[in-house]
Structures are given as C-alpha cells and as structure tokens.
Image (cartoon, rainbow over all chains, first blue to last red; front, side, top):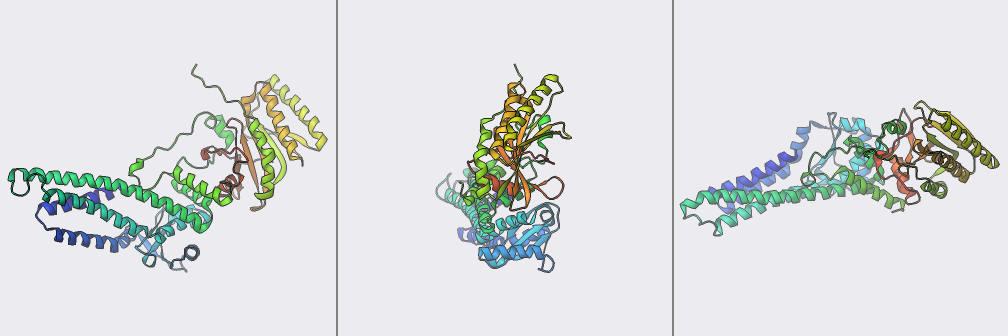
Length: 287
Length: 184
C-alpha cells in the first residue's frame, strides 16, 4: 500500500511535468491540480470504505460497538461518526472522513473477534483521535503541498532561465528529462517528510487514545495482539523456555522489520509500546 | 573457549521485594497470600539431593520460629518447587534467599530457575504473581486470567507502571514468561 502511495504521488508529479513541457500555462495546471485535489478530498473516504467492503451498521445490528463509539465521542466531545463493519479476518480498524461530521469509523470482523472489549475500545479511541485531529485533511493537504513543491520546482526551472529555454531546440529534450528528474527528487524528499509527519500523527493518536480511555495499557495489549509478531508478552511457560535456554542467554530473535524506518507510515511497535508505558507511568504517578 | 558461562543468580536484587511489598499492599491493591516459592531443576545425584535435604532442614528450623512452613513438590516439567507459607513476609524473602544461597554455595546456582511471590489482586479478585528471574536479576508480574492459559496483559502493564522504581523490573516484555498452574 505504501509503495502504491509513493508511485501515485510520483505519477502526480510527472503528470505536472508533462503538462508543463507540453506548454500548458500555469493557470490551467493550477486548475487541473486543484481539481484533482478536490476530488481526492471529497471522495477518498468513500473509495476507502468501498475497497474494504465496509458496510454501515445500526445500533441494533452492533450494539456494543456503537456503545463504545458513543462513550468515546462524548469523551472527545465530537459528533458521533457513522459506524461500519468490514467482513474480513484481517484485524484492522480505521477512520475516514475530512471532518468529525462526515467521518466513518470502521472495524473489521477480524479485530472484533481478536480483542477484549477494553482493548477494542483503546483501538477505537486511537481512530477517533485521528478524526478529532482531522488527520485525513492534514495528510491530504500535506501531500498536496508536496506535489505543489514539485510543481514550483519544475516551473521555476523550465521558465526561469534553465538550459537555454524554448528557443534552443537542441537542448529542449535534455531540459525536459532534467525537469522530470528534479521534480521526482523533490517529490521523494517531500514523501519522506510526509512519512515523518504521518508517524508523528500516529504517536499523537496513541496518546489521544490513552487520554480518552485512561487505559494506555489496554492499547499496548491490543497492539501486541494485532501485530502478532515476536514483540509480545509470551505464552510459553518459563520452564519450557528455560529448557531451550532461550530465556537466559540467547536473545529471543527479533522480528525482521519489513519496511525501513524512513519509509513506514507507522512508527515501529516497540517505540509505540515504550511511549505508552511512559504514559501509564505518568498516569500512575511513578514516572 | 566458545561456550558461554551460564549466568549465576543475582540474589541481592531479590531483597527489593521486602520493601516493595509494602507499596503493593498500601497503594497497588495487592495483598500477600503469605506464600513464596523457589523453583529449581533438580539433579539426580546424591550430592545435589543431600544439599537440598540439608537446606530444607535449615529453612524448617529457622522458619518454625515465626510459624512459616516449608513443603516441596515436583511439577510436570520436572522442576521442583520449595514452597514457604507464613504470615511474616520478611521471613519468606529471607527463606527464599537461604535456599538459593545454599544451592549456589553447592555449585548448583545455574539450576535455580526463579522465585515466585503470591499476591491476591483486590481489583480482579484473582491471584497475581511477582516472578523473580535469577539469571536476569529482575522481577516481572504475572496475572493469570479466566480460561485456560490466559493472562491479563493490561493488568500486568499497570502493575509494572505502579511499582515504578521500587523493584528492578524486567524491561524486555518478551521475557515475561508465565508459570501456568502455579501451586502457590
């Protein structure tokens, strides 16, 4: 999904470069870009829900889920968003929508079966904090600005007296390729900054969940279950583990990180757990 | 050589429990069950058995002054539990330490797995155990929950946060191995 986002944005930047090279004026490019941005802002939530197969549910159909969302929204002081369930065994929960009034919170059947009520409420608190912080809008605007940055670079370069300008036929091909390369480079840097912003917003959503529920440890427990990797409190008995000597002087094998830190939208699980533990210590007054 | 030396027990950090339990009873909603155990892997040699026997006698002798009782049992994993029961918590800590010292003095320190202290969790109306891993020199909480081999991770994290610096707590969560079917 991450690579897809990256490629999509790259296409955006290259498209603008092509438009410039084709001689489109700044105004028409601005209109096209603004149009695409508006479409993205107004339809991305519907597209996301549709692609997950999410169906809205009424309080009669999912009373406990609705009750949790009710409590969290009272605590967060936002209007209650729509609630949807997606039929898939993959444990996941997400929120879409550009404002609390137009938002939908969705949970998969996988996560409803996996987590205890307190853990589920912690995860929903995380998602509702995203709604509260208007993270969808923030990230859309930020990614739009990244494209604008690429656009300005290309525009400034091509018309600001770069490689000979329009009159020199020989250099026009080279300048064209150069423009595309520069805009791609600007885009890559903006993308990495966007990932850093996204990770920051994830930490903020974890913190928001802890504040809404007052139970940061429930979120830790939920994250470990969803992650399903090595970084969780073990089930294996100490006596079984010791006979394999793993408990004592061989470090348990760490799960390999599948995406490098610079390129992931979520912070690593260990960092999130460490921050949540600090929050719990602050809550208990022992920090 | 190539072989790592087996870690020897770190007993002095065990004594942190004799002050920490006060905090547990006053502000963490836990009360001591008056039970503590030391778990070790017995060796089928005469030397080992005689050390264990002598040590049990010593502990019985010193413990009987305060009404602490000593019992011993083997579990399905092949480990032996030496269980101390009594109302004087300090005596429990001292007794546990006496056992581990005797084993270490006999050269069997590496056979010691852990010490366990039993508490009642007032909040959940269930037992909660603080397990001391001798080789790591650190404690961690273990809160068994309803159902087969279930544990309440959230409660364990809260207890870790509440005990703060009073106990040396195991920081690596992957080492919080449970002891299913703890008989104390």
